[in-house]
Amino acid sequence: MKDAYSMILSAIDAGVYQPGDRLVESELAERFGVSRTPVREALQRLETQAMLTRDGRSLIVSTLDHNQLAELYTVRAELEALAARLAARHATPEEVRVMSQMVAEDRKSLDNPRVLARTNRRFHHQIHLASHNRYLVQQLDLVHRSMALMARTSLAAEGRGSVALDEHQAIVDAIGAGDAQAADKALRNHISMAWETRLKLDAASDDF
Image 1 (cartoon, rainbow, N blue to C red):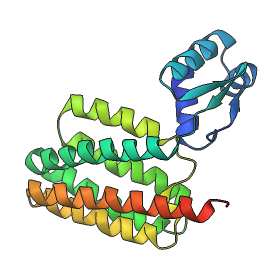
Image 2 (image 1 turned 90 degrees about the vertical axis):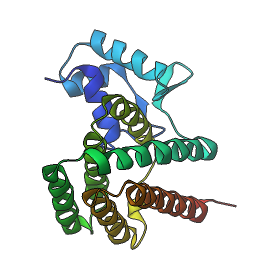
Image 3 (image 1 turned 180 degrees about the vertical axis):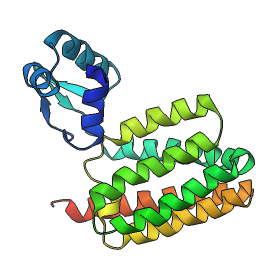
Image 4 (image 1 turned 30 degrees about the horizontal axis):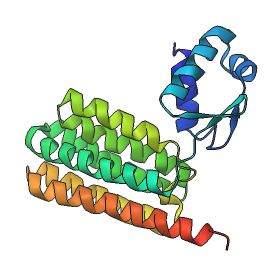
């Protein structure tokens, strides 16, 4: 059974709690069927990790501003590209087949951005694991945890889901070919396009 920290973190990651939402200790304890003490400890831990922000006496899910998003995408591109390079060198044939099957399966969810966002995280995690570097996986877990603080997924943009899956396939093809340089390039292109799409979404939603 998951502990209170993992359950709250999973709920944020799944979008149950969105950036700006207030988290109430008693409500969380009731929702997850645990006592208030582990919930209180979990909230303190999440605040220390900047996943939660204090608003007066309340704790709310943190929101990333433009500069924080830019910094996060920069770090993500570097670490993910490293994972892709290492995966091209160390991934087993079975791991490559699993990633390719993920891409094919994800095409069935093109009309559901929320599901696609979840399977997208699963796909990227598979690349991380295929790097066969535990320390890199740990760092990328932290980066993807922070990405849960994004209010919406770039995959919600019209046409982005299909293009993103094509980019996923290009990454898998490069890893399968053992071409570290091509895997690096394909991964960086994928992250760059995701960041560009998010910038366009944010610009379109700004009120002036």
